[in-house]
Length: 262
Image 1 (cartoon, rainbow, N blue to C red):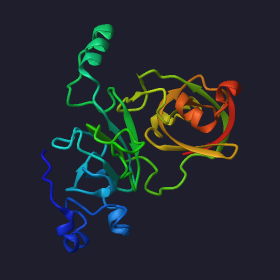
Image 2 (image 1 turned 180 degrees about the horizontal axis):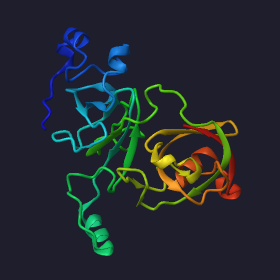
Image 3 (image 1 turned 180 degrees about the vertical axis):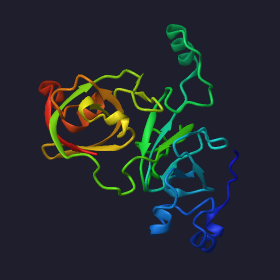
Image 4 (image 1 turned 90 degrees about the vertical axis):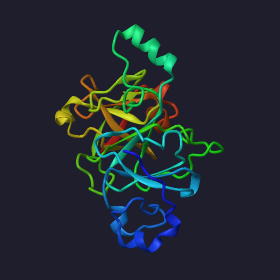
């Protein structure tokens, strides 16, 4: 579908009364319960930082939205409460051809890259409005598709598993796909985790946010993979990027005792 760009500043009264209209006001500017928990899977997009410019709302609830008319045009991303949304960039054509040649697999439609390659960034409510070229956030103006998992705990559903004390190891997925649908590509420095088979529960926790605490440091990672060889009943396997964010001395330690919950 094609999204019309409507200047939201002209209609503050209408938007306050009809929260299901598109576009809606920015989640930071409108903290009301009605807007904050309107439709998990909807995402508020703006072409400028600070929720500026002519904005719109798209739906990506458990589906890949390829953002027609909005690719490379987003600098503020605001998911509605209740979903974990992952935004994807497009893999350069020469890379896709190279990977296809090596793997002997069909090239995925160039307009549908949710979970099939490139860079990816995770957003939860209230989102991030700092994706400009002059910021430290490299996703600004690079997003080409978005997938929102509405099974996440981002909407305040509380802890659904844990807390557990277990051993955390790390691995380098090297752009391989995880065991969780829609089988996203996992890069080494993504904030992602593979959950041990003892708590896999048939993939019931896929896409949910896991909180991991090591000493005084707590990180949040997304469950994207299965770890059948994790250490102990409560073992988890973090990507190297997540492990480094949690423990700067992870290489020397190798394995960390952590507390985690979902």
